[in-house]
Amino acid sequence: MNIKKHIPNFITLINLFCGCIAVVFIAKLDFEKAFYFVSLGIFFDFFDGFFARLLKVAGPLGLQLDSLADMVTSGVAPGFVMYFLLSNSQHEISTNPYLPFLGFIITLGSCYRLANFNIDIRQTNSFIGLPTPANTLFIMSLPLVVLYSDSLIVLEILTNQWVLLLITLFSAYILNAEIPLFSLKIKKFNLKDNTLQILFLTFAMVLLVVLQYLAIPLIILTYVLLSIISNRFSLDEKTKR
Image 1 (tube, rainbow, N blue to C red):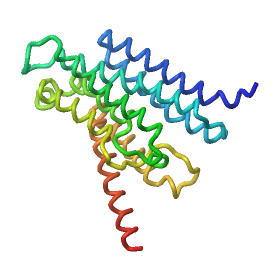
Image 2 (cartoon, one colour; image 1 turned 30 degrees about the horizontal axis):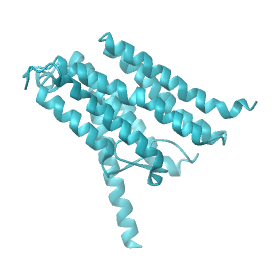
Image 3 (tube, rainbow, N blue to C red; image 1 turned 45 degrees about the horizontal axis):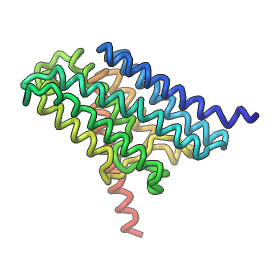
Image 4 (cartoon, rainbow, N blue to C red; image 1 turned 90 degrees about the vertical axis):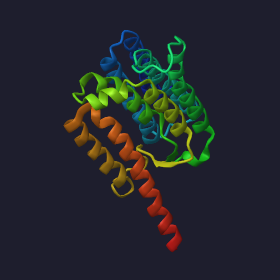
């Protein structure tokens, strides 16, 4: 039995396990522990492909397992969080008890993206649309920003049902939008090919230390903006040639 080829798949299953635990904590309204377990799941999601390439054991089974695990960690979990945020929002558009279920539009958008990602040959070295882990961290951070922020303006915005519904719809859109974004996964083991990734991750770590949970939406915004700038420079280079 070749144990080496199963190592990446085992890491993927740990991602799924973390996602399941996160869902339990969301049900208990313990959003902080849910955030930590989702983050841990995303950490393992980052490294399953890394080890698959390092050990040269990448295959179709790992690809399918990765998407199935992400469906829980980066699909069900953020949709469930938005459901609770909408359930407890202020300035209600409607008292309809079924309206909070619209939060699961995020789950539907994530599912479509994950399925499409597996068959989209354009996304081998970069992403088109916001990756599900990035979107998940953004959504999972919202209740923590509400919990720990001292800004009344921030609290007013993130407890407004209109705003939450707009975030939900935008989330599903940006996941599947035709916008090229650079990949954070390290595929070539040298500094030159990973300069943008290293700079961004360093910036993200510094911002997290300074602003904590409030940094996460800013990090996601920076990720999108850096990608757009990087795309523009790449286009200019091709035009010059």
